[in-house]
Image (cartoon, rainbow, N blue to C red; front, side, top):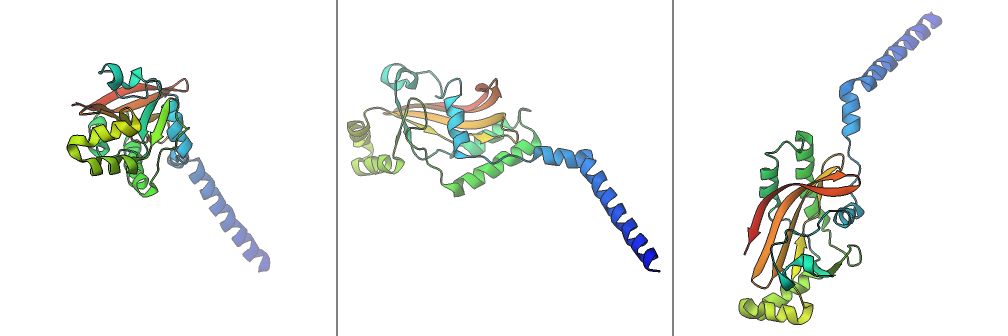
Length: 211
């Protein structure tokens, strides 16, 4: 009788092990495991801008107000997320991002606001990070008419505002907003990039603005 119970228990365990093996080998399980994203780190954000074709929005201005003409550009320390929800909806009309990628990117938008990431000086090539709170204080104190005069007295040149890149599940595609303000003039847009040969290349652009 004891041998019978042991044999029965062994058979049940063997059956359960076999079922687990079949599950692990199933395409849906393997796809789910393959789609599990690796953690997104602060370094991923910096690496994107340091290895993209052009870290600035567009080359539509001349002289001091063209960020491409400056050896070192100012960047507001606080990332800009305001336009991303509307612009990502427009980009998602294209087939570049899968349904799973889109859900993952939307979740990143939620998580990043809680994360309170700030750009750090010395991490981006050709960029000087300036304190976003200080910039707001300068404009609030000086008022609308004199704000830029007071700003230029301290910071000398216009400033960029970047979002962090929002990555696809496999980190080979991303969406990022980039804007540049220079006095009462500015430019910006939201772009989708694809990683090719370890370099980020522009794939789509939407939501351009100029004033």
